Length: 110
Image (tube, rainbow, N blue to C red; front, side, top):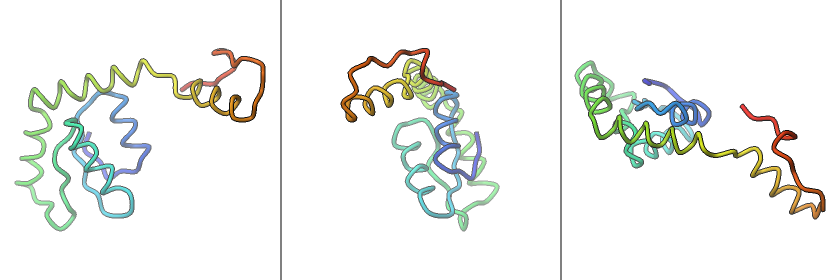
């Protein structure tokens, strides 16, 4: 996935289990780009000023290397086992001191 991103786009790439090539240009995009690289699921971020055909080609080659593809797939599989909406609902109910349990069916999932 080659992207100019936001947190949601990055999360979608992580969830899909595909390597990322991120070209950040503002705000939290730099943090997410570095997080992808630090997790080993994407190429080193390319700044807008450093974006050239050669740099992009190198990033694509890196992102399609076996370790990065394997890491991205493993991260996607790990995320697939999580149910963040249910966990969040349980935390909210506990914080609000509700006594009734939160049922999986009551929580919308994507």
